[in-house]
Image (tube, rainbow, N blue to C red; front, side, top):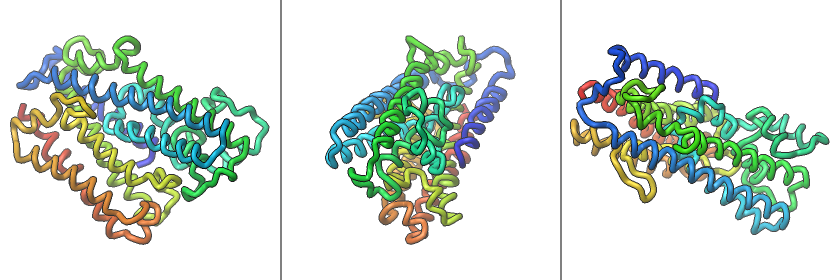
Length: 354
């Protein structure tokens, strides 16, 4: 699934959720359990905290690439590359909740559009335009964000040497990193209770929320997010390059970070499902699943673990594996499709039993 299609899916899912939960006009909670602790935990301790971590890491990426430009050593290049990976992790951990401001304010494509438009990128480098943060902010999404930074840092095949950098590339790299940091700061501000306060849209579902007329609609939003990223990993991120045997369609192909991306997408589902993130734990989707079907809860947790393992078992880097080890790639794809099927056929229907 490409980025445009993904952004079109979320508003449609939200409209369905709202339409299905507001026919009584009261905004009352139709669920037979108190979802408030879950919504409080998911919005504050998982979603907002993931974005806070993303913004912190993005700031460290800005520092790392600035240090690289000022002191161009191989050691600083490796440090900048590692910081790119560190920043990438919380972003991929957020992909099971790509709703709200990240979609409505166009932050997702500004951060994570791909593939990179390498032709126009080379034209930017060849131009005389001043490469500032503000200039990069105004570029099309295929010329900024994670994958432009990745291309500049790693080169075509994760083998760019420090002597291969030009001054223009350093200028582009530092400005693109600053632009990324600007977008991550917007995300934090949009969710922060003291600023945009999208957290409250979820926490107040069924009462004063202008977006979620019932608690059930907010819970459905969370489950829909799990479903969409499972579908994208299985039937987009893995399926597109595999079926077309086209390595240019592989996300995070320059850094050979694709498999880690996919695993962190599954962990993103885990965080929303379990209600746990880093050192924080609280109620999640699993609470009501366990109440109704403890065996389903155990099975789904095992399926998520199995998918992470299957992705890890793909030999080498994913870009080469689609042609050299397609059977292993297909095994990983099927493991993720199992997650998707369980969400669609078993977990979502449970909401109608509550």
